[in-house]
Each structure stands twice: as C-alpha cells, then as structure tokens.
Length: 556
Ligand code: ATP
Ligand code: MG
Image (cartoon, rainbow, N blue to C red; front, side, top):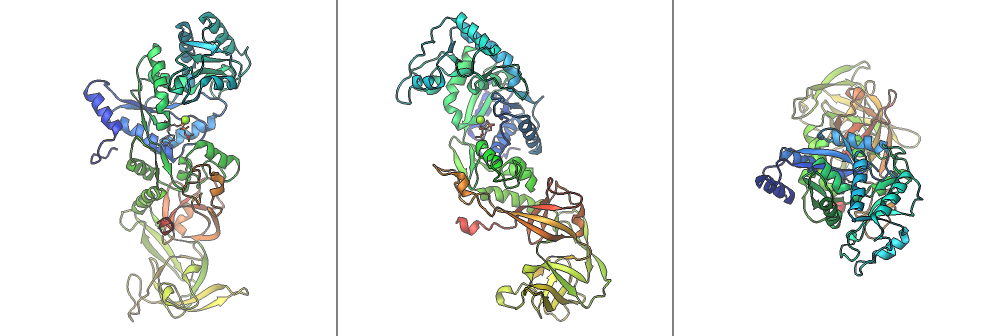
C-alpha cells in the first residue's frame, strides 16, 4: 500500500497527471522477468513498484515472462518466479502471460516491416556486423544487403524460420539509421536463427525475436500504459518507440526508467547468482545465504519485511547502492513485532538442580509473545536442564556478572532463580555438568533474602526437549562491493557464511514448529524450520537474523 505521507515519486506523478488529463483511463503495468534464473532482491523492488502502482491507482499489473531466448530459459525458473511473486503477496491480472504466446504476431509484424521496406535479411556474420556498426564516436556503414528487394528478404526470412539456413549466417534487421548517434538505432537485429527447442513452443521455431524487437510490442499487445524498467534500458527507448510507431500495434505504451537496486555485501545479477550455484559456492538458488527471494523465504524472512524495505527505497532516475543493514532493519523490526518466542539451547551444558526430586515435573507457562495475544506455551521444568555453555563461567568476574558462576545466582528465563554450587569436568578439561540449587519461591518474584540474580538465561528440560540442528549464517560476501570495478566477486566470498551447530536442544513446543513461522529463540536471534533439510527424524532451523547486527561497528 502506498504511504500517503510520502511525496509521490516521478512515476506516480506521471500517472497522476496522465489520469487527470485523460491520457489513459486505467493504468496497466507489468512485471516482465526473463525466466533465466531465480528472482533476487532487486527484482523485489521492481515487483513492489509495478504491482504497487496498479494497486494505488486502481489499475492492473500483468505478470509476463519475456521468454525470447530459449538457450537460457527453463520451466523451473518460471515456476519459481510465479511462487515468489505470490509469496510476496501480489496477484497479477488475468492469466500469466508469455512473450512466446506472441511469437506468431511478432513474426507477422516482422514481415510487415519487410514489406514496408523497413527491415531486411542481412548476411553479415557477427564479426562483420560489429565492424559495420561503428563506435560511439564514429557512424556505422550500411550493410551491403540493406537495399535487397523486399520479396527476396521475405523468402529468406521464411527459409530461416523453416530451419533451412545455418545459425549465424543470416539475421533480420530493422532498417533505421546506421549513422544514428544512438547505437541502438543502427539497424538492430530483429530475429536470429537459433535451432534450439523452447521451453514452451518446443521445436516450432528456428528463429527467435531479439528482446528489443519483442519487448515494446508485448507491452502494446497487452495494453500496458506505463512500462517501468531499469535505467540501462533508457537508450533502447527510442528503438522501442520506433517499432511501436512503425507497426500497426493496438496501443502505445510509454517507458519510464528508474534506478536499479544494488545492495552492498551482495550481488544482484542473475548471471553471477547462477555461477554461485553452478560452481557449488552455495547449495542452490534458494540457499538461505542467497539474496534471492526464495533464499530469503527459506531463511525465514517475512514477505512483509521485504515489501516494507522496497517501499522505503527511493524510485529515482539514478542508480544507487543501498546498505544491507537497511534490509536487515526491516527484517528485525517485523520479527520483533510479530515472531512468537521460544527457547533453544545451541551449545547445551547440563545443569542438575540437586534440591529437586529426580521425578520433579512442573509445567511452567510463558507467553508466546511479550505484547501480542498469541496465547501461552508450556515449559516443562525438571531436575535436569540445559543452559548454554556460554552462560556458565568457572570463575566470577565483573565481566561475567550476568553469567552463572559457583556461588552466584541466575534467573532461568520464564522460571525460577538458581544458584550454582559446583561443576564437573571431563578428561579434556571441559565443564560437562553444573550442580545447582533452586532458590525457592522465586517464580516471578525476587528471592526472599533479597540477593537478586544479575542475569537471565534461557534453558530447556533435558527430558522434555527436542533435538535439532541449527544453521547460523553470516553475510555471503566479506567485501561491501564484491563485484565493483574489475573485482572477481568470487574472491569476496565469506568462508564462514555458514556454521552448522549440531546437538542443539529446543523447547518441547518446537517439536511441531511450522516452516512458515519464524520464531525468536530468546537471547539467540530469529529462526525458522528449514523446509528442505528437515525430516520426521531431523529438525533443522535456519537463522533468519541475529538479534543485533554484529556488523554495526565494523561498518562504521
Ligand atoms: P539481472 O541483471 O539480474 O539478470 P535482469 O534485468 O536481466 O536482471 P529481468 O528478468 O529482465 O532481469 O528483470 C525483470 C524486471 O526486473 C525488469 O523490469 C528489470 O528492469 C527489473 N530488475 C532487474 N534487476 C533489478 C534491480 N536490481 N533493481 C530493480 N529492478 C530490477
Ligand atoms: Mg533483463
């Protein structure tokens, strides 16, 4: 939903004016991904913008796959993208659309331009074409095939389509202006021969439209009024307009370019993300460390946090780099407000409360959330409990005054106060058990002798906890600008981005944790059950985010 208190961005201003002046009756936008990879956080900005504009102005937003390049496109990507858009909470107008649905129409329009003397079949190979194109400072040269008769071009185009011509030996080109200062207008390629099966049209086509020949007309077919895209397409706009002006298209879309979202400590390029997957630097596209929408979902990031983050971004005519801590802020804010609480001990240390009977079992209760009315959970309290190894120190010191140490007290979160008596070490010299005493009558009360505990620790019952594995994540890259300049982004991969903690102990209520819920593990951070690695026998929790950023100091 648009925030009424925010000034309108330049696209909202344009739409407001177009509606007021009757330039359009209804706004139609679209999100047009190419199904050659999974969506990333940058795409989320485009999704929120396009769907958000339609929502705000009572219009429609289409979801259209720009599937014009069969070499890199797959149905797996189509399905993943559909799931991501829905998960973000958006619904497109009508059916999912595909550029490939328009291949017949685009081909007819290509023939139309040939007949009009505005397109021709060219037999320059790729290298020659580059030579003829000229440079930014020098004009290009006309192709020797430029003036061939329309009939000849039509026959050759037909042969290209049938598969009778070798790949790379011919293209169909628009006849515009080889001397144009805009290189996009120097007789751009409209069709290439690619004898490659397409994920939807199979072997039907041996030629495929160039993105530039398809994109604007697809918008025109769908009645898109405001074609919103990223800045790198600004120089192609005159070409899209040329096709739209020179073809009998049913409507006239206008393109508006905004700055792409770049996040520091991240890469937002499908090509690079694919490389991370293909070369095994991460496990999959939805690896929780990936800046993909599916990776963030699997990690437990709420969709609404991503939407709030995207809404907070400027929609401007310049590219910028956004600090990842801004995204993290929205994730923490949302989870702090809405995540149910639970206790999980990541590095368990057994504590035996020797003044309780062996079969002691008391059902303590704690709220699911400190402020929201989410009900209560039951915490079985027994003679043997686990606390975190980090919460016990052999010797008292000021630095550790909030820890459990012999002779000192601590409050068990949502429970009683205990005092450590002594501890047991193994042969390796590690503390493996702490013996403690319960300070009676301290549930929700201070001790009667007024010796108050300084700290609070989380805990679970040894007999009533559930085993789990916890995956802790750090940023995938150590470098704030992993792919800047001529840097190889692979060199910046953080080798410690995943830490697997085994033998962790979760409170009983997490036995049936849901994958769609992100919990606050009290004093540890936010976690959600992993949808891929968990099974009936094994529970795996992904860390969504720590309670506080450990990067704050490093960043400033
Ligand atoms: P990539 O550079 O990751 O390959 P792309 O631009 O090739 O992305 P598309 O599938 O063509 O990916 O993108 C679909 C839409 O998302 C386009 O309108 C594109 O402009 C937009 N988009 C892509 N990346 C970003 C980004 N980082 N920020 C904002 N919008 C983006
Ligand atoms: Mg693209």
